Each structure stands twice: as structure tokens, then as C-alpha cells.
Image (cartoon, rainbow, N blue to C red; front, side):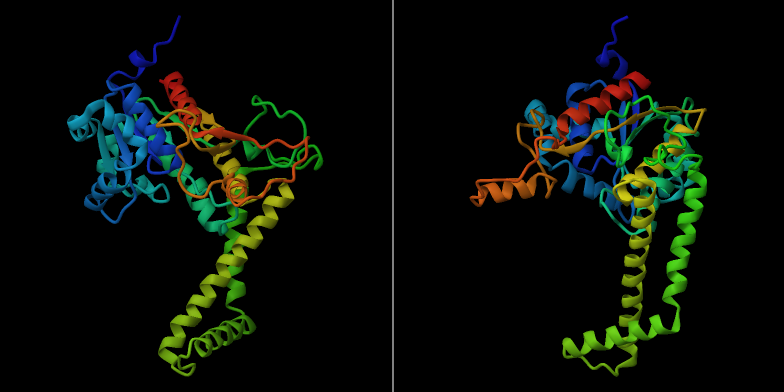
Length: 361
């Protein structure tokens, strides 16, 4: 039987997480452009309250060039079309029910046919707690939301680099749960995602305890005083110094948890905390047997091929340094013929996400 995306998406209600990001904006726009008969899209927009969420959606998201094809298609009716299809929701994956009231979460989920989760902390080596909050705790929170649906369906955007530091072909049908890149080296070692989460929480607590050490506390004070002297401020003003010491401590804990997290990711065989935490998120989702779930694993996402127009990009992405040095006259870029610059246009990724959603419905 031939599948018709237009028919499959017709009237469907989609809960879209991460629609404010680089990939998310293209995916949301492409969904509305190609499948205007979609029922409704609940789009999470993180803000302080629901009103600010709506304002941010209309001033920062809809104004993006990614929505230009829709502006051209609907002209003066553009705003009305968006209002008829998209409901901005103030949500944060790091919070239970994404920060919604339980009653509101249940109401939205009962009206939802599928969740598309494109949220994630994409910094390569963020503080461990930050990565886990978005990519791991966030996954658990989304699963809890999914279970409020009549039939739980979830498309989760991950990364192909969860494969880690391995050579040769790595097939997509390799088991997700219990995976770690060095499993062929560390024979007999098991990898348990729940234990990893517990161990990471212990590492974060370890960093905080180290920060309470008397010598470390003295170093924070010394650093704060030196900073005041450099800035021409009074180093003996205890009131101001107290907040400066707290800041030094906070920065040190962040750096220490990043260091501990990177060491752990490296040992298991991942390149950084990002790929490590994304793999943990995959394993949590894959282990849920009562949910229809699809993992989407793009490589390095770059400027668009066609949609919203050829070459659209946003921010300082992976190939930006190469383009910058070329523009500045650098005629030679060191390469190795055996290495692959594994990039994919953002609109191809968006198309794959929508195809995954279509097949899950």
C-alpha cells in the first residue's frame, strides 16, 4: 500500500518540542507548508509565562526567514493561517510535565496524536548536570507526557555520533539499550543507563563537596579579591565580596562537572558529553515498550539545500570556520582523503523527521 503523507497528516494533532531551534524552525515551517491540513501543532516555546511564550513565538520564531515560503504562499492571510494551526505552549523539557499544570498537560496530551522531540543541549561539553537535565531528565519527562496520550507515539531527534569512537560500518540495527562504544574492548562489562544517571548525580555531588573544602574556599576568596583589585573595586567590601565568592564557586563547580563528565564519556568511548548524554537519552526511550518510538540520527546539520531557500543558515555552525577562512583568502585547507566531512542540509533532516512522524502515525 502506498502511503500518502497528505492523508496521514490530515487533521492530526502534533506536540512539537524544540521548534524554536535551528532544525526545529525549518521542520515546523516545512510541516505547515507541505501539509496545511494538519490539525494543530502545539509548539513549546520556553519563557517565563504563557503570555511571554506567545510574544516570543510571534516576535522571534514566526519572523524567521524559515517561514518565508509560508508568507509567500498565504500573503496577508499568513498570520491568520499560523493562528489557526499553531498553539504556542510555555514548556521546558527539564521540568515535570514540561512545566505545565498537570491538568493542562493531560488536556493537551489527550488531544495529541504524536510528539516530535527536537529539544537538546547541543554544546559539546556542557556542565554534566546541564546536559543530563535536557537530554536525560528531559527524555523521562517527555515519556511521562507521552503516557498521557490515547496512544503514545514519539519521534526523538538524536545524532548519528552516539556511535562514538569506533571505526568501520556501524549498523543502525545494533541494539540501543546497553550500548557503549568500547563494548568490544571492555569484554564482560555491562552498561546500564539507570546506573549511569545515578553515577552522574554522584559526580555532580562530588564536585559540590570538593567546592566546600577549606583550601578550595580560600582559593575562591583569593580569586574574588584579585578580580576586585583588577577591576579597581574595594577587595575588603565583605557584602560585595560574598556574592563574588559565590560566583567563583559556581563557575568552578560548572568547570569541575564538565571535566568529570568529559572523562567519563571518554572512558566509555564517546567523543564528548553531548554524544554521551544523547546516547543515554536514546537508551531511556528505546527501553519503553509501551510507546511507539522512532529515533532520528542526523550527522552534522548545516545550511539548507532548498527549503526555505538554498543556503539558509543560522548561527556559527560547524563549517562556518572553513567558510570564514576561505572568505579571508585562505587558499588551502588541510585534509585527509580518508576523512569524511559528514554534513547534511537542514531541510533534508526536517524531511526525515516528518517522514518518521508519518510512519509512526
